[in-house]
Length: 259
Image (cartoon, rainbow, N blue to C red; front, side):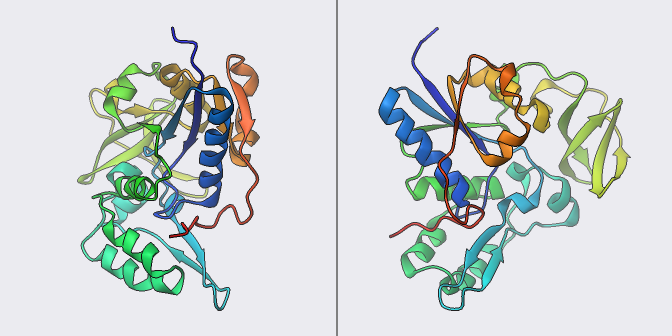
């Protein structure tokens, strides 16, 4: 096995202009690579279904008012329960956002947005990050990728599965032998379980995600954010050196490139 450093950071799609904390993770990884060498892998967790992850939070430079822009979906089931890699972008969404963006960003940033492509929320976000030059020289591993899932460690008792429901593919939680969807608060409802759930349909919840990811990527260094530091059991992974991402102000706001 290669002894080359493998520097990894992970994040869900985080807005079509990425949140500043994702930008900070990328910059931290690149600075570390400049010191120790090796390669960088971005674990792109596009299996998540939470549409709030892709809210693009910006500030009007003149009034300082906050603006929240996000993707829209074709129907309620897709919006609430389909994974981000399957949340389809409806016709007219891009044009609508392009009309709203000049309030927050300059002409070149609008043009960059207009040049981006992608049929789903996750694809569009990733294309934007690449067009911004943020991922130059960085490998991307997607949690939705069937080959990645087949290589990863087995998920048996508690996992999420991408399964059919009401004409869509949804990310349902396997809980005590049943598949369930989260209505909100502490409310859930069960959905039919397919006769067979294949390994390529499965992906982990938060508490199992790092180990599942690590079984494929084998990172030696991991750039962790504030949220991850609150739940990651770092002692379970002595082979990994965890590095806090750089501090950045307004971390939940969108990173807007200087063009």
